[in-house]
Length: 467
Image (cartoon, rainbow, N blue to C red; front, top):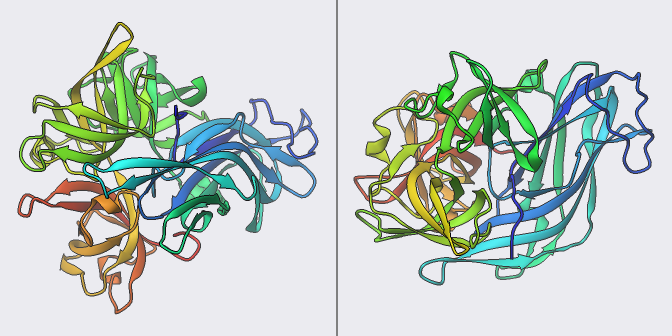
């Protein structure tokens, strides 16, 4: 089966005055041309379910409702893999909405496809189920109506709760039945500052000393603006050397005035024609220098003959590849992540050269980038060790996508730079009862044990409405 490109966690941006307004969906009236416009963007995320590595659905519509006029905020259907990311956000679209007070949002979806890891075979394999929807439309009321005024920038956060949405049998096996459960909130983005993570695009051209254009999903072009504080993950690759063969992952925010992407970090994921994003499911040999790795492919640029999203691709390695940790531009990253430090459960980006002979594609891996990933589960009571401040460690009972590939419980290391969300700090992980949390960070191999550990960039306490 050929999977469409998926964004996983996504953001749909709604523009201010100057862009064409959207006509209402679901029987709503058209927006008067003189009506003022506001800016809103939507974030989608998910809640975990063990062993599920993919839950792709076609989002056919997103509508904001104000009781009289329903306004579409999605310009075209989009295939979204809600299991791809946890705690991260990606940019999807840009459109406009009229000002007004909105009380709910309606999301329509179709064609769910669920992928899950089968660890009963060696190496692990991925199986898929075509899901069956109990309903294709879900309307969620906001906690309170939200007034959107001219030139405002708002964020529409949508969470697809996999645990509640995907039915399982008495043995915990997925049945394929999908009863979609969404949680939705509309927030002022200037106060909540919901960022964009790892927006992938191909460079079209460098347009200035601090700007370049990229092409993202659905062929839309975006302008990326850098500043002195923008971090280039690989400082050896200058922005003025970007070509049309360059593929980048951009993190940052949407500028409320220009609607450019103000970049906080730029990671060059490929200078050599192809890029694969996915999850390592097997590394061979299991210790020492790897000669082969199985990658569960979630994204590919460009479309490569013989490789499909949702399938496992075996890649040959020899140690000559350039190894790098995303969003960290220090030379010591090669000591932490290299050909001998690959492990099942790591999320990586792989790029290199692509040649096609008689219709058959040949890949030569030249660059392997360790990427951030989100793992969710429960804190293990009594496992917290505090060295000083927020520096220390704890254990996580990990029931998120890569959990079946990682140690149980999963050791988590924190630093004084770790961001604690809905928690006062590392000391908040205490008591006799498990605490639901989500950790975003990197899976690294502990050189002392040879087993994976997670280095946390953020630890988020999950409430009943966010886990």
